[in-house]
Length: 472
Image 1 (cartoon, rainbow, N blue to C red):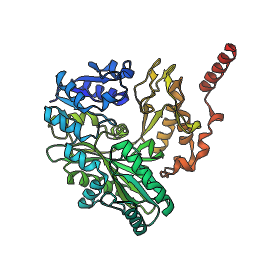
Image 2: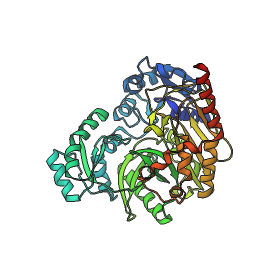
Image 3: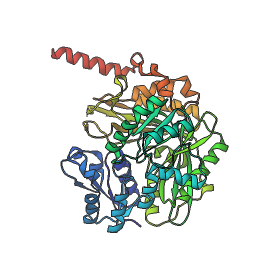
Image 4: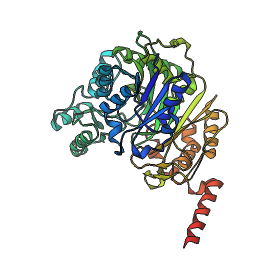
């Protein structure tokens, strides 16, 4: 069994892994850039070591991270998500140095990280993919030819992409011509690769993903699906498990596809197979994330399975602690990403000091966060500062509990997406359980939440105005 883990990440996911280690009797080692010296994961871990003054470079230096793991006596490394979590080099260096990488093999990361190679693997597995190329585009002329074959609109995508970056929809030939070089530029800057591919655009799909777990003993299971359709510019905002939009037959079908996909590529550890569901109820493979997902929390809530602990067990060489038939989803769960952003100002990041923070509570409420009163949100990283997770026995109860928890939580000193989510949960289209990835764009009126502010928010606003007036 693994005894000591270096957590090659920061923020709430690092705190999440520290907690899993503590329950398993495993020592945790945190790393931090100077901007994170007072971060919660640094305070919670058993040991913590500086990566130097640069705000990002240390988190992206695979050799340094593994060297630190070796120097501190760790026998494993957990990459979390983001940064180097899907980096084949980090996994390969861990393997060479005798450090267990808590994730799949370098070969599988490389294969599924290349979106064109992943498409070929899924075709081999018999998993449906959207019509398009099975290789990187040679030039614009080839892109134009493929677009004419599959029909507009089409999507240009970075072959090494992820996280909603390096993607552009092209509705006609003119947009394809204009977007081609831009996507290449975005792909090169974001992922260090100019390779892009093209596929048919599924218009206003539902975004459905399946959590899988696979061990080194040949066992592969799915933990049912999550609905990630509430998103903005390919960035997820609210996630649900299970999807309120699927029938039981669809649920079993897509779960089977995900297991087949993972087994075909020899997958090991936790992963997520993402699909698009079109208006005709046809599923298409989109990508496979070879890491822990931000939204793994809601799968834990409906299954009772600690996915991070299961990751550690798998990396230790142990078999899965359950069989597929033993996994039964219970109720509904929802995760709301509390981002330090101003929805009223085109979601502009709102960094600064948390002057007051109140965590919500009560039955079925969980918060995964890295903030506290007095914490300074640095401007160098992702704007997500907390995840609010709620569970209830049925869909109506989930919405009621979600809205109640949004009134409970308080994050002051910066603007957040909290009031915006309250408007979404109050929307009839959301409450009906029928929505797709165009929901945010189709409901611009939900941004206008000024007249619906809670008494506590109004009091804070009035106090701030009085303070400014007295200062003058």
